[in-house]
Image: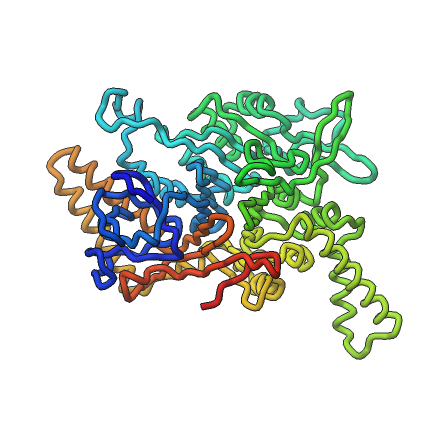
Length: 545
């Protein structure tokens, strides 16, 4: 490979070390992992090249990098909620949820240097200004469902003119103010929710007011310009940022996310929500069955995506619950039975132990056989290698659904200061019990970012006080702004140093990595787990060192 000055290259080894001299004995400056970006500085020896990476300049072995960009999936520590940042080998950005607070914004600010970015039309920057750039384009935004701990973190992102969202994918469920005068007399409405009217068909209730098209979403936003509903106000902010933004409703009938079809290097198959064609007052639309109360329905009908690149499959979903997992298994497991009810009956029989009658033993054997058949059928579509745990490790899950996914890696996104004890002990146990292989991997953004000891908290507090003192002593507004920017950048970096779980892959080899909180060496900053495809088994497996 002929190296070209100032061209981008990427780490291809599982990990490597940036050193101050072109020798293995050189002092370690930084620990790099597969997929890390580097820029060649024009100097090399027979075996080493001088590179810039992670704000460091040093030497990297030539055998440890190439010019192939990898897929990168970052499960960002956004506290309570979900937030996933994906970068494709073509450098397209996909954001799947953004939590409730500003952690995803801080991550993007750190990643794309937003605070120092000069964008045309922002803060007086014009096209002729030195280093003026267009805004950072986020090609794909997925809001899995309208729960605040998944979507409200987008508000700050959409409010920043240095960022330009281009397309928002959603489930079609949009909470909106519903006045009595607006209600269709031929539909039914629940008194205390805003999911819209529903109709009944074959003894089931279906949400009729599911947004179907880009035009319909734009019209809905315009109709409710002054609403304080947070979901609509977040979408309104996206539209204000980019008036030509496109809204796309995703469901199983979509099959694939546009431009990520099955024949593309990266595909994004839409597994849920599952809609049904409904006809009412001469109109045909795709409706969603009411799974229960408002929260159960809007959570359960989350957008569920299956990302595939090479041999790797990853499931990325929202807040699936027992009711929705039953609903998915009806379709993918080809059954009309409630799997959760089968599980409960099986559990009751198993508890009897040696007191089980012959008839009950036969019933238990039949139940086990039935569930096994459902799992076998559903795995044809649902089995993956890596899955993001739905609903932050809640106890509202189906063991059969987890068995169906059969992942070797489960990533849990949860936070401190929440009222649900996520991740729940029974969920963690089930992820381990029904995970694939001898040692299934379970990652947690919350566990990866443990609370610091008091001495470190006080040190961090003192650092903030130093920033405040420098701001107070600044002799001009420009100096004050510069120091304030430094302080914000320090806060931004704090979001990504601990807690984030990152996946890097070329489709054949996969690494899962998280930062070590107190590394003893500059050459060992990452905790890395490697997966490789086993042709004999027909799937990825953990590489044991």
